[in-house]
Image 1: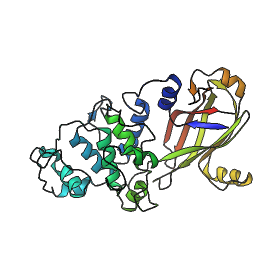
Image 2: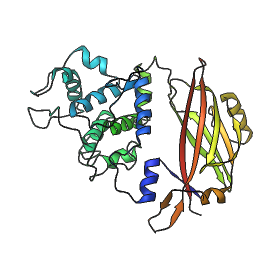
Image 3: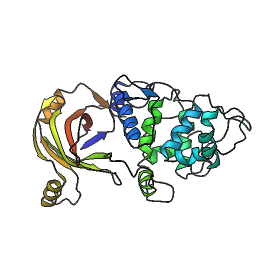
Image 4: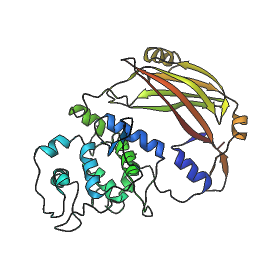
Length: 338
């Protein structure tokens, strides 16, 4: 039976028995998350590169003032925060950060390091940033979680996915970007509504045409797998076509049957008894034995059993309604425990 490893960094950590890495996401994934948030208007860069693209300084530790600013922007509340600066009891907040700290403090998202100091230049910890996120989603520390181990709840909500714990020493802007992106899909307390849906309903990202998408493995059999690509519920836009230019399994070629438009996907899935739709679908036929032999990474289970990782690598071209194309490559990891 196939089991999915959710990310490359997790796969490498499990396979090589490494210690917790300096940050819990790959630089590539963090850059993608930062760009997604940037394009949604929920994250800002620290400057621009020579070609005019935004810089995010993802390899730097954020301060508490920066972390609160990141939070306020994620919530689509920057305009509300900067319209009127709300007073706080803190005497050490720099002028630029006062609107963000004031807003977050007034909402109960953050406190100070003591009664009169916010500690704006202190680096923020994973526990502190996760606590900010949970409070913003309506969860109460002391009731729903404890501030010194918020990952017990953020893991269940699908925000942190086991990447942080009491041993986590380093927290970077890369982590903040990845956690912020994950929080878009987390449900607010007492509601079936995600933060993303709330932002859409409130008009915070109404002008965006960004496609927020995901994929699932539909079926796995011997030498066969199928994947569905679809817009996340509440996504501001979708793709009119999604074509896989290349698919490999542990670097080996394979045969594919593709359906590349939303209309064709809906019709094809209906013909095989599936109701869910999307903008792309692929059936992959490959040599599982050869793929296992070609594996270069492994997962070791708690009982010591070692499994070869099966890496499905997809190179795609996605087309928006405007005709604009997005191209990219990503890899999904599985292992078979049969």
